Length: 153
Image (cartoon, rainbow, N blue to C red; front, side):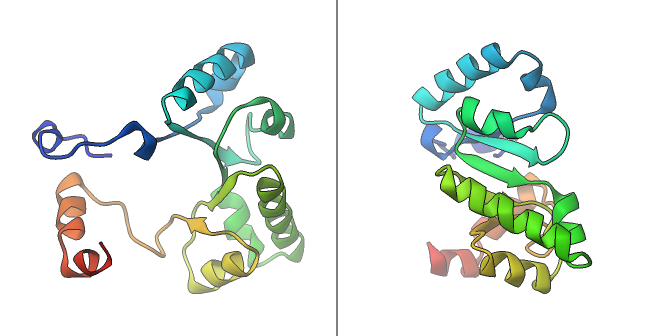
């Protein structure tokens, strides 16, 4: 999302292209959180359960909380290369997300090995330094205008 006001005059973002992530504070009042996310989803705004596996993101929320995407916390992604058990946890979360008809996104992908392993497990979405360091609004606009992006548009 572009935050600079001067870009907002040139960029129209339709609600169906928005994606909001949950924060742990939203789960302190589950009924309010459910009502709020249902209202947002009725406007075609996608909801992601962020940092799944840590903090307030409990298994019980997967069946109660209306969401579109399950974001696997980076701690699991970092640990899976060194621990077969952690890799199995990631694989199970990916399977669970798919079984519940959720998109699954892995956070904190930093290496080609992590990326390839996640793809083999069926994780289609990811974010992390492997793809790009964080960009400023100006850097993002330059990237979107680059020949590489124009050839994929």
